[in-house]
Image (cartoon, rainbow, N blue to C red):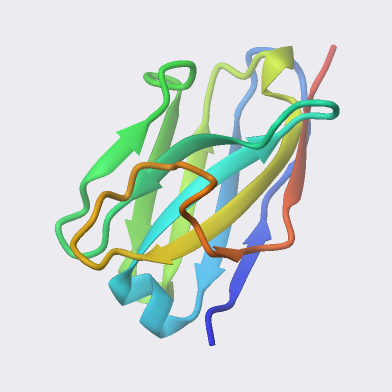
Length: 126
């Protein structure tokens, strides 16, 4: 069974930083693509970043490149999303998700990911 538990959301002023964590079940962590998505009120869910198992390849969507960093932490089966230089447009519910790699891409397309966490709210406001 794939289990994903997010933590680390909260409220921050523009320019601030937050670090989101997603603890995955052991098999999912070692074998699956892991990704972060977000959904703002009234908008569709969109991919933010993803990381491959093993070789640790990463994808970032253009609007976060250079500000956000996705990382794997083998000691506790956790994937983190370090978010710096936050702007109000980053306000959303953030979700961790997983999918079997099966030789394919780990690109964070929400249509391709099959297992989802419960989400954690990020609010950027002055």
